[in-house]
Amino acid sequence: MNTQQKSLDTRIARILTNTSCRDFLLVDAKDADMAFGLAAPGVLSNHVAEDNLFRTMEFYREQICGIVADGHIDVMLMSANTNAQLTIDKQLFETSSVTPAVRMNDTTDIWLSAGTGSYSTQPALPFSTCTIKEAQYGWNPLKTKTDTPSSDTVPGANLGLFSLTLNDQASVDQPILNAYKNFRLDAEQNNFKHFLEIFYPNCLERRRQIPDLDRFIADQAVRCLAGIPRKNRPLFLKIPYLRPAVMEQLAAYDKNIIIGILGGSSGTTCDAFTLAANAKKYGARAAIFGRKINSAEDQRSFVKFLRAVIDDELSPEEAVRGYHAVLKEKSLRPKRELRDDLVQTSNDEPTRT
Image (cartoon, rainbow, N blue to C red; front, side):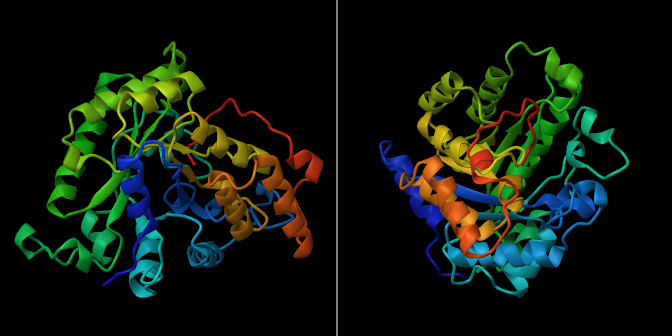
């Protein structure tokens, strides 16, 4: 049984009781194997994706272990398989302040196998490979609610991510929202906590017909949460970084809603650090980064400097310079020269992790 105090719990408690506090949650999204297949662990150094030379899941999980050991993040998001191996078998989180979490659904828009290309463009449909019991125990040992032990005896993850991709089309959005409702009811019966992702419409045709995508996401978030009693609400949201005015409105709307932003594509190191700083500036209280961490030359050092930016210890530019200094000390070749890595770029096409 894990008795270690989790930073997630203490930070959320402070955020909800003191709106002026500077606490900020950091989540590493290492659940890419639920989406990308062989490419999930990332491209080998000195290669490009077209070479089809990818890292292994062994390397991927080694990075998870190192990042958890450092303790700069609050939540490690994984697939059910990785969770079973690291949380249950290896007991990685037993003496860690980091909380393990599992992606609880894999809607059709993240079926991103090479050679298909069509799943991601069709309006998302609901699907969940993993069950709550599998996240908690690594399999389904219990059949009834009365057999379910208290949450503090769960050997696996007791926190999950549930994702909604809404396309402003009732025939496909209603089943996804129904799946979320059923998940919440199951989670309540199993003392299982969750955080909620609401993503841009994945169908480009539908997306282009929405005049204000940022308002669409913000309005869908508060509309959805309005029907959920406080006890069963998600701990925090995972949404795209919206324009500042909408972020500020969403943050002010209800102080009990903790807003988290997703990272999107990898970009430059300055992109990642600046995104986190701007998100905090305009009201977000969490960042859930996947590719931005996984594509770093030294993931553990990257996360360390990302935390320093989030905690107001360094500016994004100072953190980029510090990160490059560490790469030089470790004789690691950076993907970009410092001057190029200090540049902010833009990416018009939103990506989930």
